[in-house]
Length: 117
Image 1 (cartoon, rainbow, N blue to C red):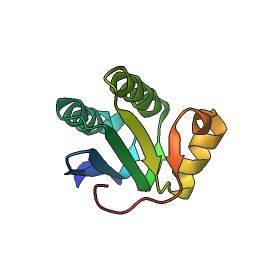
Image 2: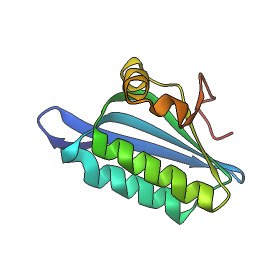
Image 3: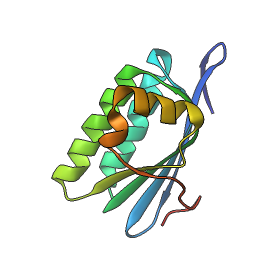
């Protein structure tokens, strides 16, 4: 777990298979945790797979800068023939995507397995 300050923390876990990459995000993605989140995005770019699945079941908060990073990552992956999917949204993540209208932009799966597909 990357603890930044106070109760702000962010962590991620990645599982690669030949055809997919599962990325589980946990905690909060706010200004103070953008550096570790961007490191996660760089790791995805370093070893992309045809399908990248973001598990947001343990994401408690996501700020606007992180949403912009996700949109940029989605565009980067699509330009290279890959697909970014979002799965298992926490209640908080689902509400943010709904309010911002981004639920229509991302491919969202209600549930996905907890291991790389």
